[in-house]
Image: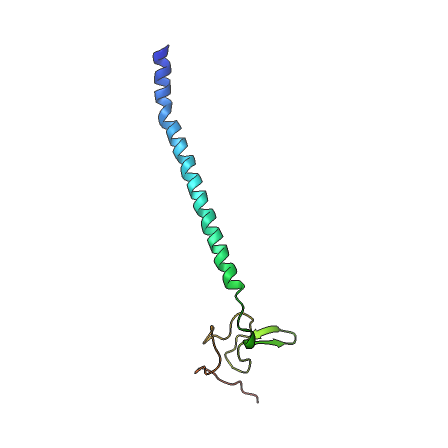
Length: 103
């Protein structure tokens, strides 16, 4: 009887070890995913809530706040992006400045 129980226990050991290793691996993977998501969210929030310099902001009726020189042809007309050529700015002395044609 004791020999039968011993054979049964030895036979179940590999499967129990496998289940234990799978659970452990799954828990580690979930922890890494949670950490990656929190870092990504934090970085995205930092990028989203960084405001441009207040001297660079203009309020346009019906549109809202814009940044950069609104008379420039390349201005993005956005509160987060100055222009397509020089997105980070500054607009003063930009070599790509082109005034809009007012025909």
